[in-house]
Length: 289
Image 1 (tube, rainbow, N blue to C red):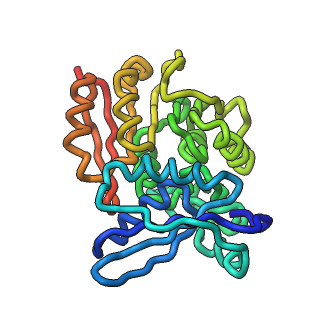
Image 2: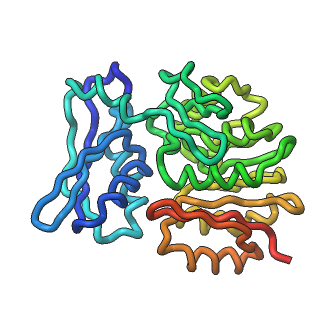
Image 3: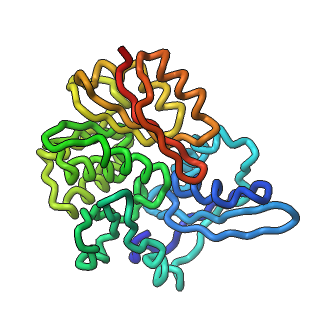
């Protein structure tokens, strides 16, 4: 939501009361960079705001894909809002956020205020998913802290903002491939790498559909995307992991845990670590013997 934009899109979602956290998380997962709540008659709603440099239909499709497992949530309104006072306050929604033991996610306007001893991940809150403020992203970052060792090679599938690829390098990976099917997103991924002083030879950003055509092997594979593409990804995972390698998956809600663990098992993968935050769940898995 740049200050030069003359308007923003909004999409309004509604569901029964008690699901406020879920609504906010799903809106952020779709690429929203701000939201407002309303409540009445046993219903709760959120108006989610989106940048105007993509058409409204682009955001509706992204949101619709994410809402598939949530039939109780409906879109009730959409439109655009002129850029008035809100542009002076939206940056306040992105304070520095400490994640895990040693990471801190920071928008670029907070550079110079890094907490001592923390590794900063500079991410511009744009249209690509992965600001670091979503629980599923935090789950993967925390698991990466436990798993990734210096000198390893990594790949991030559905990279979005490239936050996980950037984190991989800052945690010691010598290189990380970052893939996304959406070419419009890749420019933002490259810009975030530039903000972090990471070269194109260290985070190798490429357009690609999941693991199709990906011929390398890596020590750590990350994928923070919704369940349908994750399930499509699973049959290719073992072939991409080096012996002893680990895959980290999130973008999953807690109610999908048992189903996804069974899907892992069918592909010869076994959970070695799990984590939950709010409604969200993630898992680190290795090839089963």
